[in-house]
Image (cartoon, rainbow, N blue to C red; front, side, top):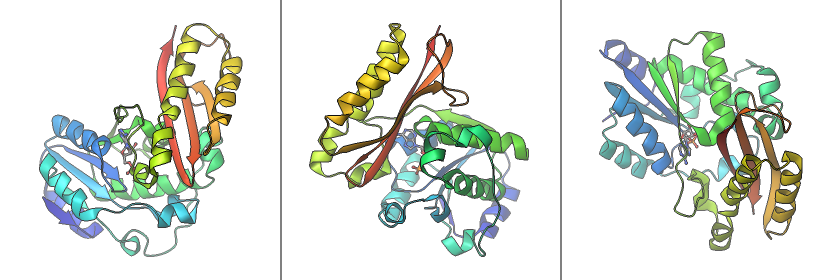
Length: 279
Ligand code: AMP
């Protein structure tokens, strides 16, 4: 497995690669969810590359950035075992030799949920993903549905800027008790880890009730009330939306629905979602 630390090393390698390349951008501290993206890429491409870069400009909370887990040696071992062909591990200075002043505007898509609670987050994501796409020149790029809003932003970015590649979105991998795998899960203490499955239980409960025809607003209120009783959990948002644009829906809506949640367990912020069809 080749390891590149500079954009120039990666682009010059990529210019000479024949066949298709699948690309998996990550922030490291890899878990099985990340590795499932690597596997999907390997199934669909001649070559697979991965980036590991904790992107400072997409963090809106300095503590979250400072405490973001880093397990580079272990990550490289896991990628090698999966048969990943190359890894890009740039420094912050390599990615941002100067301060970036570019500003993206994703309209209504970023006025809700993650965009509303983490202002500037998707601008940072869009800048780093654009730079990574330019360097990695992939035919396909792989993202997880766990970050649903991010996948929609990146699809819009890809279309609007005309990146010549396909965005592939893969299902969320979960622990046995339903908790969505996340690099941040290792920051949960034992007590918080025991509480954490309530996140997926809440959105699964809402999904069941909506499919049974219950009123969305009433069910959200009931779920929020229930979460208030979970000591140590602080809800940021719990929303039911049109899955293709994340705008709110009423009870008569038919089509793909997303139920999205963000909450804190102590200082650890976790997100999750379910997407399903209502006919
Ligand atoms: P991150 O390292 O958290 O930026 O994640 C890198 C990629 O892995 C993103 O596209 C995430 O959506 C995806 N990802 C993170 N967690 C999971 C999971 N539990 N299942 C599937 N994909 C995931």
